[in-house]
Length: 85
Image 1: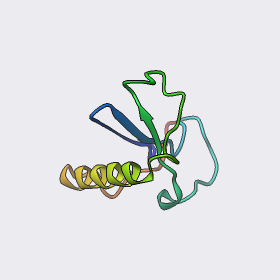
Image 2 (image 1 turned 180 degrees about the horizontal axis):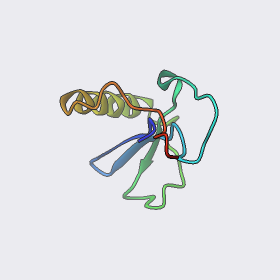
Image 3 (image 1 turned 60 degrees about the horizontal axis):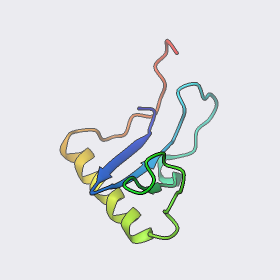
């Protein structure tokens, strides 16, 4: 939704918050988004972003997300808000 993306895999949670539903104005391109990474087994509340410590895991999970998005016909990624919002 709104270009936000996430993937859970083996206790790890990777996500991108592209746009909040209430956010207005021009948005940056999807390609400029930065992924966050959390170890849910140790940090259930998602406080400690570990993306800088595990860049290879972030890249692998992003690639897996894109494979699944293509497989399930999510692409192109919808980013616009519905007109009624």
